[in-house]
Length: 279
Ligand SMILES: [Zn+2]
Image 1 (tube, protein in one colour):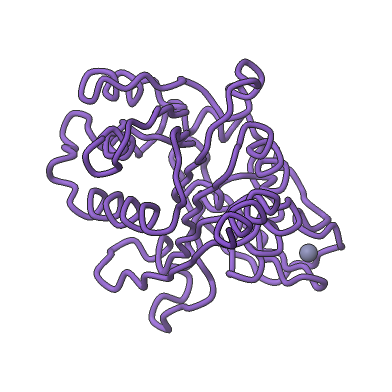
Image 2 (tube, rainbow, N blue to C red; image 1 turned 135 degrees about the vertical axis):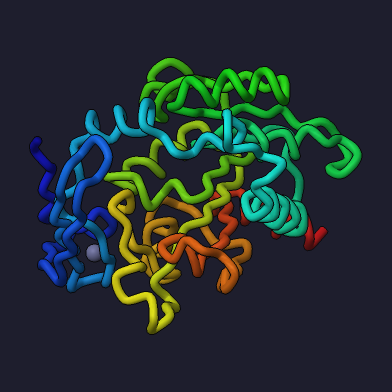
């Protein structure tokens, strides 16, 4: 099994050096893996320099996914932390957006999160919801439980087939840290985005001493700080609207928290919004 080898920074393009190694034993479908954690000396971005090839990751997310919140013995009604997170993100978005008529969620799991955005009473008007989800099981559950039609596939497959429909808000929660080239990903999002991008990722800005290696995950490629995420988004033409950092003291998955909760707006759109407030 071959891994990719990244030798230049995916945010600023400078050369990178190996800073750390983490050995993962007996990963499902993948075996043992020695992760090489690299750092960019120019902008400080930290990431796995030897991620698995896209086709290996695609197979993993399509067929070995653990992100099936509503299936079988894993009932959404019982997954209180996930539902709380979705509601926290929903409130954050409603508090900070000007308006939005459509939302696209990348990595929509089994549709619970998108179902919140179908609540016309809370939002004040109807919002068109769309999601992209690699797991076929999840797509069927979204249809069955929430009457939400998801695109079954990867983001790249979606973009190839649906390049003309644009969305006011693109939403990805705990997705960007899994993407091999986050810069290409954001640039692709931009081609189908009218206004906002919501991003939640685990952050390295604050870590607990007792976690040690718990901060690393075999599924995570990018280890963002607010600075590196800002560098990425600013260089792609987005500016920050608001950000929060829940520490997640009660959350059991160390690699997922603390998290950066961020809302970005296209810089041109920000200028228009500002002019509106001056009138
Ligand atoms: Zn860099």
